[in-house]
Image 1: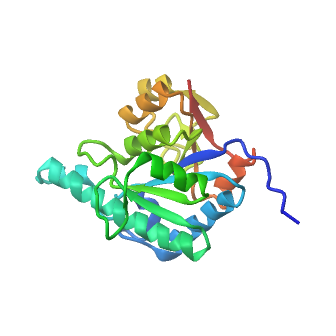
Image 2: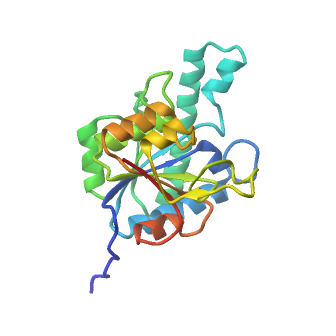
Length: 242
């Protein structure tokens, strides 16, 4: 007898998480139990029948903008940051396959012995075969963040929403860690995010999402079951839309 899957709000989604999310309580690098916990969260959503794309930042290993600020040539620093995202993607792939989820790492910078090159039609086919696609190396171009890469790939893959996993359970009018009176938005428009500098994603990513009418769901990655809960119509989050 086939198990009945719960109805979900979206059939294909992009999960964007920062590299820092993988380092747990450490100050640097990868924390394997944290990577495993996130992989198990992804599996619960995958088991609902949702097709999942992922983009992971590289800030736990190297951040191009910081390297540039310290005197490194910006283009070189950004390429180093892109390589850091490949390392994180491979770690997440290993964790996902450890829990039985077939996964493909797809890089914007060709490195055939490590992962697949980005070919849109092939990536779509992987999703149709219920494989999780982790898009690495950003857009393959310097001066673009992984936020922009996530929005670009989500648009190309015809995702129905971007899920932005953060440390807090939505978008606030000011930093809730520093301000006890911070107010969380249930819904906010793309233009409000840009005008009020709410820091959801960088401006180019927000503009691209707006132009493609792609909603952004901001939620807490630290909340157990949060990713699955939102897809099942529960949980606390902020929705960014037109």
